[in-house]
Length: 233
Image (cartoon, rainbow, N blue to C red; front, side):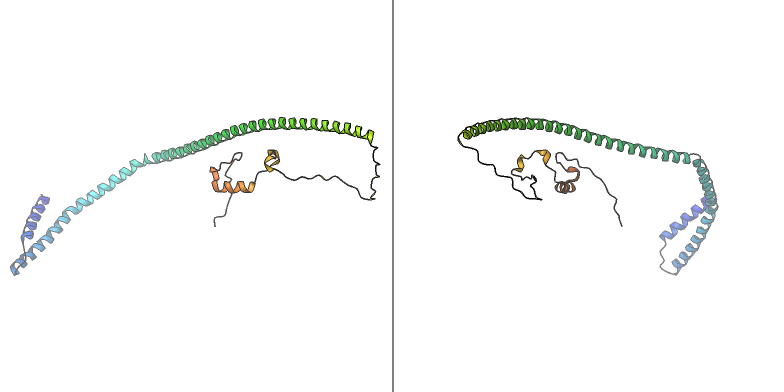
């Protein structure tokens, strides 16, 4: 009932105040009366709702406490399970990435071994062909040398029958000194040198690898990353 009276009086005051314009002493006096009445109405409204708000606050506090008590029965277990589930998923993801990386490395290694076997087979075939060629050339050379030797012997024998052999001079005497064989060599055609007598150029290869990294494509070369520890500051 009190609430209805306050509302009706507030509506009446609001309507009169809305239409009132202060133009003279009489309207100023009425405005003053409305202001005082309005302030009194504001106080009555606040006084009316104050205990209701207090009761509502206390009820809300109790509701919040009851809600917190009920949540405490469930939330810790939910959080624990969420943490456990998150840890499991992270671990499974790590294992999956490691498995993928291991499979990738295994495939690369398989391809490398396959290429290595093919290269070695090709190298063995080439060496065998080279060996046969060299052996054939060596046999032909020995045959030629044997024919030349026989021809020289026959020519020397025929010549010996006509010309007496020249006197054989004595060996030169150099006390304390003698001659020792000292074989050496010179490269006359680098393109014909067999592969086993060649060595790679590590400086040139390293420069290519440092620029191209994992994109390096040099037959016979396996590129890998070997990180080193460096000081950051």
